[in-house]
Image 1: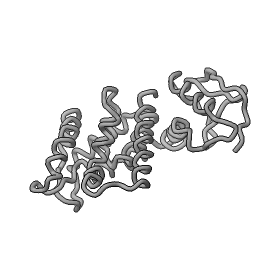
Image 2: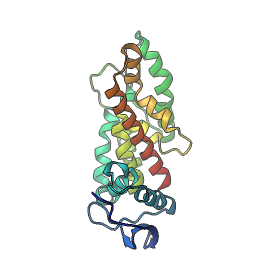
Image 3: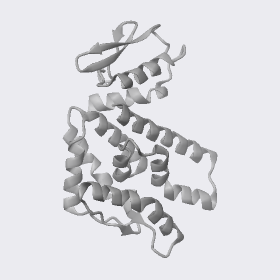
Image 4: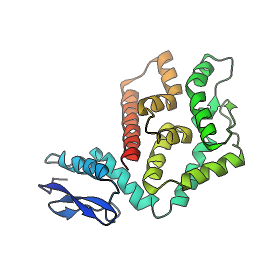
Length: 229
């Protein structure tokens, strides 16, 4: 698609800010008014539009895509989104460990256990740690509490979690990323620990490296989105 605008500005709207292209407000991909609650987020959205050349790159709008996810898909039914995210607690990669006698287990304990224990302490819950890959259910009380935590999020943060959890295969990592002091790089590395372990042992080809880099960039963008919103 060719660039069809000359000027990118910001305008105030009911409930927040919106990007204007030659004075016309941008709408979501679903057709809704794309109004965001924070000026800082609106500025980033405007920068994405202003950075386009003569040909628009659809893959260069991570913040727009997250905004549209929040407005078009999360806000209309946040309870459905929260319930869907609970499956990442049931299969959370941080809870499935190598056998204790395997070298990988020690690294998992070092990198994963602090994150798991921090979430347990924050919400007064307990997770089941599992050796191997066969699924086991998590305690019902833990899932009920996490459902409440997710329902307490606004559409913006819930959209960020809905992006972070699949990228990390972990609801624990996704919730940890909401902490303003948390490092996205460290959290992504923790979620990617097993894959990185295999790379250390066997090496990594270029295609896999590109996929990992794209996933890490998306993880960083979703973390930034949560903090801006």
